[in-house]
Length: 304
Image 1 (cartoon, one colour):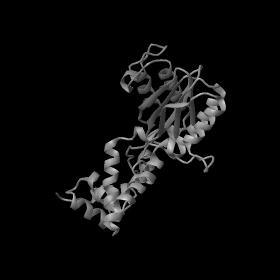
Image 2 (cartoon, helix red, strand yellow):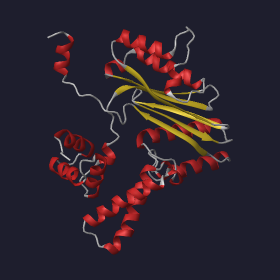
Image 3 (cartoon, helix red, strand yellow):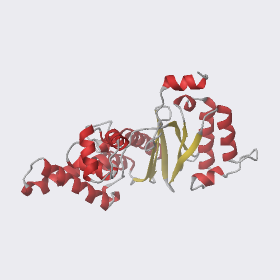
């Protein structure tokens, strides 16, 4: 398969590896981008794990909680530019959508778009009107809800809506204590972006895949075969501590883990506390953003 410049560029942007290393990796796997990422990681030439989730689109997210504090919603709506994302009409629209979701049981974006508002128009019709009026394409990307029978759902919004988080805590304990803990946990999730709540939630295929990568890394570093296995398990445990919320170091006190913070609060209020669910939306994460030359774009807008 022919390795094109655009393929090399994409791989370099995802991994931060050198151009020639990217080209060699692509040749090795016959142009498969995902496999090339693994090859570069195995050789210690990639920072893909940290780069692959970078924000690549504009828009706004928000998170709200119901009046009884037992249900939370987080939503993301995308726009073409950050300028529109700061538009007051756009902000109000995102907030209105969040309110609609939390008061209903919508399960997907298409159902939400078909919802009829008080003025008789559907969400999609209102969205189309706003696109025409604001002059920029917008799309409802995703939403999620978390709910508890007993306990509290807590929200946190960072960076004016760049990151929005909800954390659901199931417990029969004091609500104010749960809300205080929930706020700390939501800030932790916003800052550290865990992939899982606990080790029990980690996909077995993910662990097997990471173990293969780490073994290849160790062997490529010239480590003896007889110590590779122990070394890999150590590195894997370190990685799991970074991706599992309960295993992470608590950002507000580095002497504690998140698990310990929760158990301390549970002991204080005399009731068990369980994290029932976590949702974290970072605007544009995983989306590609079209690169524009600003001067050319301005010239195009004014007809030069």
